Length: 172
Image (cartoon, rainbow, N blue to C red; front, top):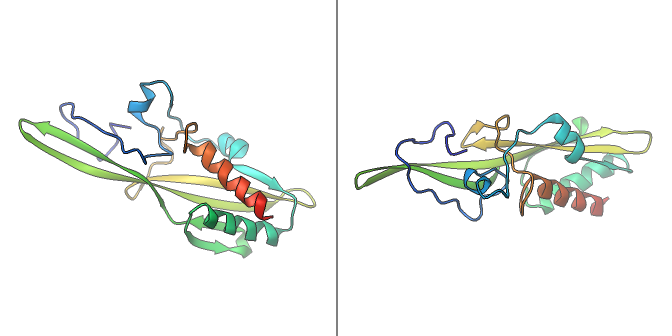
């Protein structure tokens, strides 16, 4: 991600990733071998970003809405008639991309956020399928289709999905 669009490039400048920077892959961490960057695929969302709930549509919607709030997501809108909930962008962190020229350093701060779009659909005669599709933004640019997703680790995408779905199941 260090060569991302909008970043200042030039001679190698020191880069420090904030400790609260999560959910996004990291070139510096990847070199340590503990993280890798990936595209987010429909298969990944279907396999890991959805759950089945044996409940009514109304109860599934209410539990999902409450679960998102309990996990710290602010709701941009919730539409029961279309069974859709969209969160407001949630901060992941900020990177400072800089250039050092002689004794002068200049840089650009880039903020990353994540937003969830949650769809609820009937699944079988007595159940609902809840699918949480994340979108990632670099400032206001959607970069979700790029190799930016970190699945593993303390606050990777798998952990975010698991925490949300655990909370929703508790509320059903």
